Image (cartoon, rainbow, N blue to C red):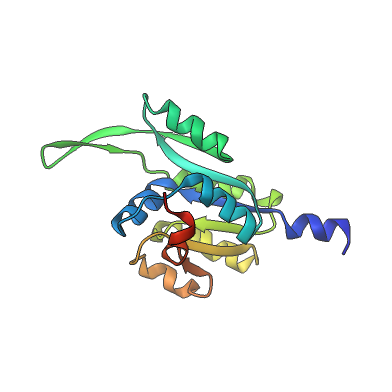
Length: 167
């Protein structure tokens, strides 16, 4: 194996929709251990960089520090407090940032692992597939967007790894 082959063989990046991941595993009745998940991504999918897209909320600095210490590159999105049914709900939609960073980093990785079941990533997944740069789509929900069914050969449900990854 040449040194360039070795480098590209181990140079995968993950792009993680933290809200989709967090709510998805919680809906299945468990809590993700983010440190174990980072190690899992490295060991199973050879992920060298894991970009975690997360809404920024002041007061959560300890969480953000822990995520960074666990090996994630955190990309923060400003959040908005929106009233829904009379209650304030924090919104920090990270879809555009995830797609943007996947394309900014495109020349730097061999394959991408997308962690989300959101159909908003269809165009990114389609493009990565056409370029032979998609490794996996890890879906955190039992149900995920039907738009991603076209890529079922790449889809794996995080529930399969629950015992390794739960808190």
